[in-house]
Length: 255
Image (cartoon, rainbow, N blue to C red; front, side, top):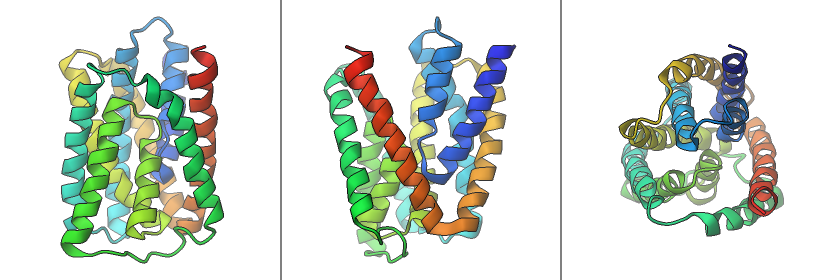
């Protein structure tokens, strides 16, 4: 019982962080591995997705009610993200992500340094594209990061946010709102794969899902209330934490 309480609290906090800028897996996945150390890793990943998909889905709905969403670009991008996630999940059964594991901390460091250097990055919503151009570029982002999420995963939401800001000219609030839809699609793709393999503990995932949605609701409200500057600050904190976590996993934990 205590194990489920800890996992549920972790899911609540993960939903909160995920709703603002992504990175909830940074909290929930290690918590699951700590609480259930003898469980198969695939089952813990599947159970994580079984909870997280509800939080990201709920955040998408909440953002859509208050933020203008470019659906003509985001719907094809979400489909591309779903396809990319499925292909990535299949690819990881054939190719080891060990090389990417070691490169990831440096990629995230580059994202962090770029964001810190560009003080005005993501503070103003000034889309650079429209129509088919916006849809094509958003779909490219969805396909690429969707594949990454299926293949490896850490920081998926943060990568979506950064690329929507850097390439499409969105502010951090609109980028976070858009990222939620694409992240929901990649979560669905991964979850379908885990379900097919029987790697979801539904009795745990169901309880965590309720907590994840509650955290998502709180995070979404804070993001909408405080705007792009607040989301940018949380983004910097989350990416910094991801650098430390992925760096430790790549160079110390596996040594």
